[in-house]
Length: 484
Image (cartoon, rainbow, N blue to C red; front, side, top):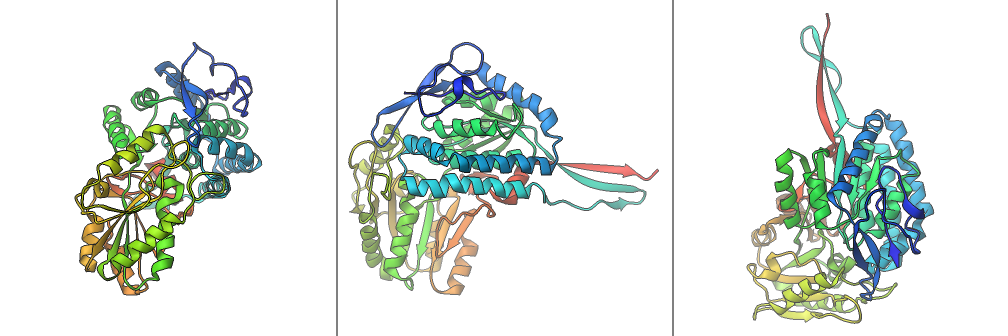
């Protein structure tokens, strides 16, 4: 049984989360309540992590504030060296991180190793370089006798909360730009997937001064204490739209900045001129990767009416060909019993007009669910409107570009989308009009570190990755000097 601990002010209690039994209750102070976490592939409990109280959260923020006094004065070159060291440590410990990530998520090992763990090291290397070439304006004289310049500075202490669908990679997306910009941080992983984040925190202590990176485990109460705390200048969360709205409301009391990457309901618009079978297979991968537990996953397939039936059948065949469960499978399990209940709830409430072309039910042990394709739905149906966050995709026909765009943009979510056609004019017009933060043409979910990731409307504010993500963790100061 694994016993995880918080990491505050550089302290790694009792040897750290080494995959064995770790005794102790965390940093100095009274014993904390704990929360269990489970293997979603089997439903068996893996261990416990602290359910940190407000006093523990305060201790972490005090440590981060003290560390910021010196860390903010580090040069970009010094911050680059620290981040490159952390990237190297991740690669050196990839098997240890992978074990923890797969244990808590049930993800297939090979793809998780390459796309999430090792890519996380690459993303840190991007931010290590980006921090040395931050954009700005030249000093100049806007008023005679005075020189003006603009400083880009770190915000200060940042509170960060990560989700359970990509525990390690989302932690990288959070800490990378924050640390590159010169901030210190307190990060809370999701209570169902804390293990790999605690390991990341331990590795960070080998690269950064004490107090720069603090990891605090816990549930909703811990997160609320972080948002309410007076020290952090920003709260950054990746999670549901509901959680983002709660954070934005709570943060307003202390006028904190908020950085929100929230829900999605991504459409894929498919025109009749595509290769039906190939496009169906690629969209199936974009819909069912990580068991559909991805805010950018294809969830709504909008197909030109003349090929609607043919494409629906091809998509159902592609979904049925995917394997579920096991290290080499295409899909792992849903994250928890609660998430499985949520997906099954949507299926139980399908309207009479809906037709299940593939999947539609749980399968095997643990929290696995079949990749599911549903046709015959209307724009107002719950399964079309609301985020399911599971391996479920709907199919709807359209007759014109205008109708396709009306259906695609007819959602409160605006994170990701794609358009599929061999007609250059079509994809140019449609991509310009899609009201989403990311638009892919003849592909889906291609996310390099250099590209900004973030949405509009109910999908949040701010950007992850890219130089835009780095700049989100900075503030602008104007400095004017008299020539006297």
